[in-house]
Image (cartoon, rainbow, N blue to C red; front, side, top):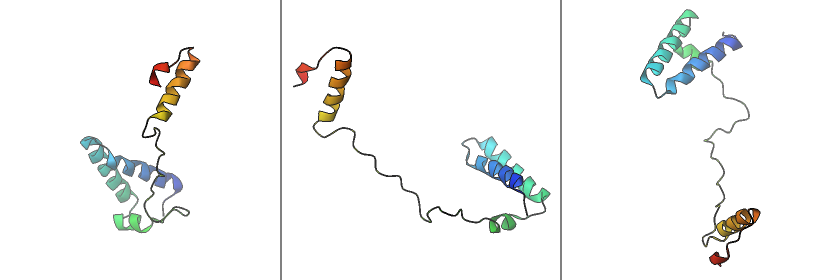
Length: 96
């Protein structure tokens, strides 16, 4: 149906449909429609030829939770400040 280079070009054009600029979205839609017409296809042909990428999960990808950088009492933050000031030859004795 389409060569790998043609698919790459079409996906690049379709990626611009999510632009925050109205003109870029409109231009991408016109380019994509012209591309499909030039290759003698219909959008149903393009959609039907899509296949899921193997190895990806079927559901939404949820990033792992980030660990809390500071403890509730601030000990980790004070430790960080002490290490930074110790590197500069100073101390934080007033923090306790």
